[in-house]
Image 1 (cartoon, rainbow, N blue to C red):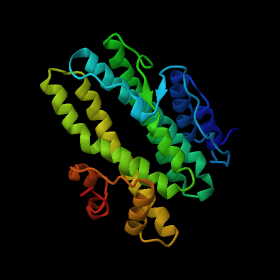
Image 2 (image 1 turned 30 degrees about the horizontal axis):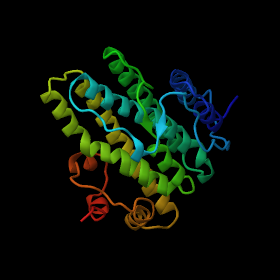
Image 3 (image 1 turned 45 degrees about the horizontal axis):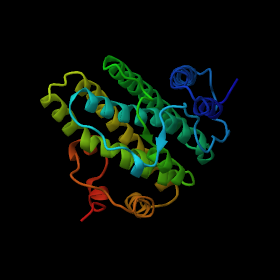
Length: 264
């Protein structure tokens, strides 16, 4: 019988997106139903396997995205699909990379569920691309999300701060305006998909805040101070307002933690 960290590595080493999604579903069910019983201690690879396409570029080298019409929608949906594919790996990576933290079983369960949510998001966006005559891999994508993972591989608190508590929280800030803009432009297919992602992201941010607080207190740290210190160290550009305070409140993200880190 394999451990959950071995299962995580199998997902991370699967280059084909469809296989990555299938394995996530299978292993999530095995964990939930007790066929996988132990987290284990198998370390994940430094980088997950990736398909030959899309071409991965540094963020600064990405071509300017077109806006408006089907071409603009394809560009947006493709970029989001790429984020969701990375997010599947991030969910599994945090389970295996920080298994040595000896956290409660619920920690692993939360991030397995996050990975499963990201599978649903990725496949939903793939279907939208197909409806527009496109597919994942048709456009270049940037590697910024996994670079953030690499920079936080040494500290679970830093990973929680940068990924769910900053990058996913930023999605909660910006998604409602994106949905409104798309709807105004006559798009009645993309906003419902983004609404599903938006509400799942609130739960993901909540998991980040909850486990960050747990680990900080376990280490004898003040959670707010620990959060702000790691923001300064790992995200020196600072946060960009405006914030979706309602969504962040639903995620139990204290307003004074993040608002003090906003750019002047």
